[in-house]
Image (cartoon, helix red, strand yellow):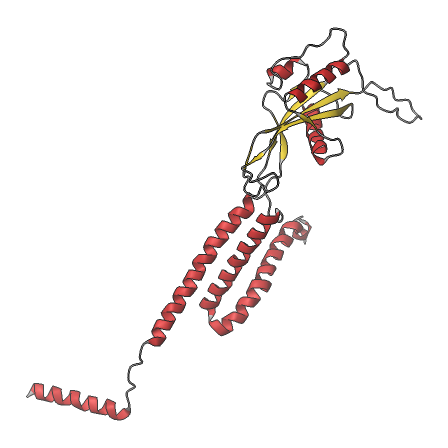
Length: 291
């Protein structure tokens, strides 16, 4: 009874589910077909149908990007230049060729506006804050800022996201990009602003967070990893398709051999009279040879 207390339920249930599915679904079909085709031919037909179904599922998953999927596209850190905590780091990271002229009496917020204009001059575009692309870049940039220890979690805001690159080619026109399998590198620069320190008072609602205009803006430099969402279905389609066509060739080869054998003329059937005559002839040959 002590063995029943061991927490193997997920493993046992998973194995039993797979075994029962194989026995009930393909096994029952194989059992029915084996009564008509024979055990070996039925197994070959069932195996061919299985890999044909896998090939069709791989094609469906490949077209729609569902089912068996690889890693989704994500924003990755640019090695050595991810979290930039001062304006000069933008030049060192290669984001800007030179640092724009920043007035000595300008606030960090005004410096950020001037740097934003310089980024726009370099070809960057500002992402709309309501777009999904802004939300993805904001989430990834927040993770990098917290992991690097630049800003504590919940004490900053991503105010702007500057985007550049990511164009696909070749394109026949602006709308038809079915054959655009290649992409230029895709980068974003996320601008982070720290909040003002807020004192929590017991019994009162927390104060609304305000951006601290006296603190240096920080930037997060990221590159887009396009992932490999359709790689597993491509491998499945090619592998299952190769096995499916090989099994189809074996079935066709067997069918051709069967037709050739059935087309051959049957040997004449021996009757009792023919068998007795041939036996007497053989006996006479043996007697003549002995004399």
